[in-house]
Length: 153
Image 1: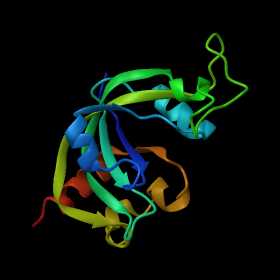
Image 2 (image 1 turned 90 degrees about the vertical axis):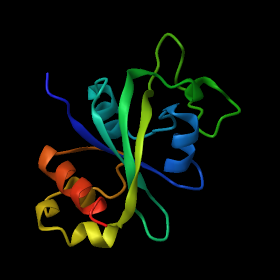
Image 3 (image 1 turned 120 degrees about the vertical axis):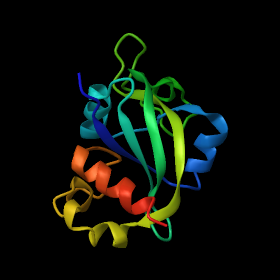
Image 4 (image 1 turned 90 degrees about the horizontal axis):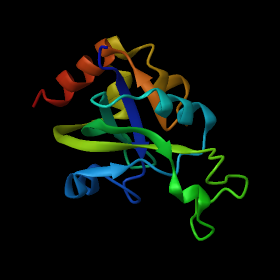
């Protein structure tokens, strides 16, 4: 099966590409949007991931990762002390899932959202239509265009 491409968002103050580089592999927890959760359930080991810094000045793509583990129950949903606790979730009936992502590399050049909007190959990218969606698919052509622009130093 061909590897798919994804874009995942994180606020850099919470978890940045540099944090992932230090940890090497991390669980992508705290996603509380049903569509984003369903996209994570579609992810497969080895799928390519664009790491996007959201709510940043400026927001944009900072680097690459890959899926290291397929979807499994997000433990933060069961923890009453967690900001991501969901009292409706139970260990025998989880609602929220996470995947593990592995650091691949930081781009030599950060690609801001404004720059992304200026790349013709990205005109129909979901990022521009569903800006609040924290996990979303990316076409292979969009993935290649972003990588090419980020590595063009």
